[in-house]
Length: 395
Length: 233
Image (cartoon, rainbow over all chains, first blue to last red; front, side, top):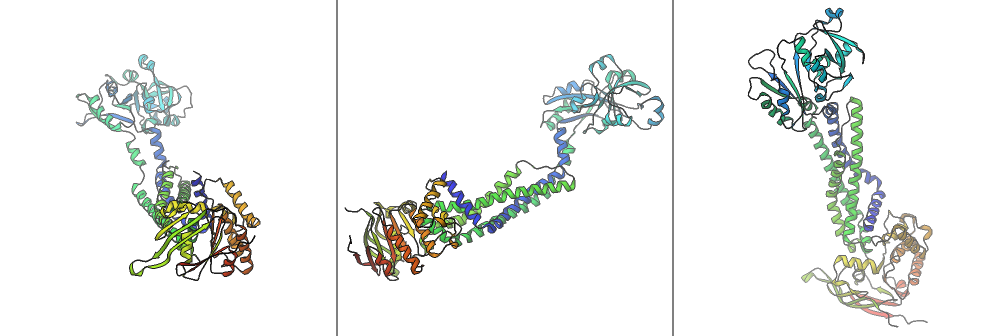
C-alpha cells in the first residue's frame, strides 16, 4: 500500500514537472470522451421531453377496441369484456367505456345554438377509468358505484371542456346532454395518452342506458394496465380472452408504443459522432504512447539513477504506467465535464430537456483510462527494460 | 580486529562479444574490500575501471567468477533480488551527479528512500538529516539548476548516504568539479569513513587516489598493483 502511495506521488510529480506536456496529453482523451458524452447526451436530450413523458405515463397501457371488418356501424365488445380481460394473468387494472354518439352537449339552455355545431364526445364509464389511466381529478370526484346503482345523473368533464365552459373548480354546475340536465361532480385532468378525453363528458353506464340508449349498452373500448414489460404478450392474449370465439372482432393497441417510437434518439447520428469520439480517444491514446516513449528516452538518466538507487524494473514500469493512467483518468474526467457542459449549453439554446444516461460518465472515464493503459504498455515496458549501466555513462 | 569483507570478487571476468570477437574488459580479477576501508581504483581509459564499477555496484554481472556483497553472492541472484541488494547496501555518487531535475534537493535525497515502507514525514526527516550532514540543509528546497556543481554533488552524496549503505561507491566524483569544490567533496568522503562502511572511489585523478588508504591500479582488465598506505597513528 505504501509502495502504491509512493508510486502515485512519483508519477504525479513527474506529470506536474512537465505541466504543458501533461495538458497536451490530456487533450486527446478529453476531447474524445467529451465528444462521445455530448453526442449521446444531445441526441437523447433532443427527445428528452418525449422520453420523460414515456417514463411518466408508463408503457403498459393497452387499449382494446371493438372492430368491424364487415362494415357494421358502432361495433361493440361483449358486455363482460372487462371481466374477460381481467382473466389474463398479466392484467393488473381494467376499465371499460362505451362511446355514445349523437348527443348534444350544452353548458346551459341558452347556449345551445352556440355549441351544437361542435360535437362533444359523451362516454359511459365504470368507476375504474382514472385509476387505469393513472390520471387524477382536478376537482370533485369520479363516477362511483352509487351513481351506477342509483342511476344518478352525475357527470365528470374533461379539463379542456371545463376551460371551454369556464368552470371553476368545485363549482356546482349542470350540463345538458340532449337537453337532460346532469350535475357536474368532477373535472378529470389532462389525459396525455387519450387527448380526446380532455373535451369529453363522462357518465355512468346505467345513466346512459336510461337516457340515451334503448337496448343493453355494450362497451366498445377497454383500457388495461398490464405488468410492465408484458405489453406485447398481454395485447395478444387479450384478443382471445375478450373475443372468446364470439362474433365481435377485437383490436388491441399499446398506447405508448407510438410515443416510445417518437422518443427514440437518432441512433445513426449518435453512432457517427460516438465513432468519431472513439477515434479521437484512440488517437489521443496514440499521442500518449508516442510522447511517453520519447519521454522515456529523455528521462533515461532519471530511470538509470532510480534503478541504481534500488528501484526495481517493476517499480519503474509501474511508475510510467501510472503516469499514463493518471493522464487517462484526468482526461476522462475533464472530458465528461466538458461533455456535460456541451449538453447543458445545447439544451439551454434549444429548449430541450437534459437527459444523460447515468452509466455514460463512468463509462467515459473508464474508456479513457483503458486507452491510456494500452498506450502506456510500450513506453513503460521500455522504461523497465532500460539498463542503468547504459544510461548512467560511468567514468 | 579483523574487519569483515563487504565486497568480494573471486576470479571475476567480464567479456563483451562472442567467439573470436570476444573482448576481455576484466580478466580473472580477485579483490576483497573490507568494512571501514577507503579504496581508490585507478587506471587509464580502457583499463577496465568502468566495468569494475558496474560489477561493484551490482549494476552488471560477470561473465565468470563470483561476487559476494555483504555475505550475499549476488552473481546467483536475479535482477529483482540484485536490485534489492543494491538498494540496501550500496550508495552511488556519479561524476555527472545524476540528480532528477524536477525534484528539489530534499526530493532527490528522498528518492533513495522510496518504496521502503517509510511514511512521507519520516522520509523527509531522514533526507533533511542527510542534507545537514553534507552542509546543504538551507538548500533543501532548491532544484538542481539552482545549485552549483559542488552543491549538486553534495546532494548526490546525501542521497547516497541517506540509506546508510555499507558501501559508498564513487565514480570519478570530483571529475566535473573545480578544484575548490573537488577538495570539499573529497573532504566529505574522507569524513564518511566509518568502521561500518567501505568507501570505494573509481578515478583517474592521482590526487583523489592519494586521499584513499588503499590504491588499486588497473591496466588492461587486470589489477596490477594493490597498495596500502602505511597506517599513521
